[in-house]
Length: 502
Image 1 (cartoon, rainbow, N blue to C red):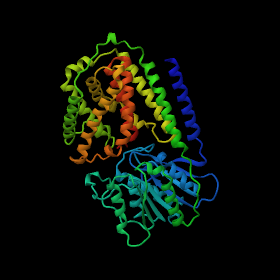
Image 2 (image 1 turned 180 degrees about the horizontal axis):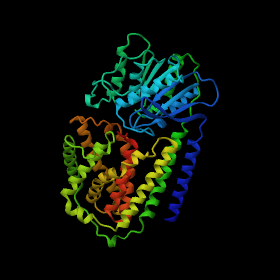
Image 3 (image 1 turned 90 degrees about the vertical axis):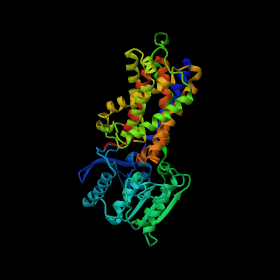
Image 4 (image 1 turned 90 degrees about the horizontal axis):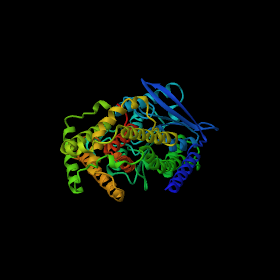
């Protein structure tokens, strides 16, 4: 057993070391500023080559639930072309203080462009306004009012209720007339609703100064890291600004290194949790659980999810957390957990066991793991380190998420080593049913909480990692409460990382 732990520890150290070696070298000059523009304090990174003549500028906007750091590959690609790139964090994202709303993001983005123009840092005839997703829509809307040499909108958010997009899903209404010299890019793996709306933007132009392009085998986020996207964007910049094209590409090292280090941290997370949780003393803690068949649990989760979504049409209890659409998710889980605990209150009472030290140990393990992973991501790939404004929301969010995790652990029952993978599959199935209830609210009750669908893949990855950690904590402590505390802390932190603050 010690040998296995040694191998895991060695592999973890090697992966993290290789990750640092790949991610940290930066051949570009990157400086961070807080720019006061129209009352918006926008944290902005300026990226350019360390040597050479500056041939123009790009103002590059990120999408919703993202930040400036995730735009680094494109920013460095433009910088390699001899352009100076301004990449801000929208309000409520990354390091920029809130509040966030799509309208305020547009206002702050336009204020930034006007501020840079007013200071003489950019000139209209030498500047391209670009963006991804919501940022792509913002770029198009700004360029319709502020003079710019060209526009590049990558996977722009739909601005018209068409191709299956309902009005409440729109972050902006009424697309502006397409500015001249506009390039619209979509990924072939994106939903037809997004591709169709993007293609429709060209209908407002009666000349040949605009172009629509589809990148093969590219998803909504993956398109940011595709060489084909960068090639098309730089070719457009070269054409519009009349500058030489370049064949050099920035490294994918930060992305690869970040993934390698993340895997390394996961390798060491299991042994770390086992050590923190301490020795297993199940003989002192009565095993508790409903012993219900999985089919009945699935039905209860489905019914509870529908009831929770119906209640949310009238009341969102955690709206005070002020997370853009994250308050809806947290409230949904709070209501679902409360409903399940009310139905199974006897089993929940039996499962409410374990010494306080077990809960404290689980809380420490959850916080330590969260801080370690967010520090790594912030260092390499994504601004994941929480700001003070987000930390202030952490206690309320963790407390609101605790009932669901406790109900889930109670219904799943004790952890048995010979059934750990079956238990994990059952837990993920229950969460899939709950997520289906959320999407039922989006698609059929028109709740408008579109981030639940856009972020589904990332939540799926998170659920697998979080659930495995909860199983380890539950097995080592024998306490459903300790596992629930651990899980609630991780999910609260994850929500605060990806949802903007309002």
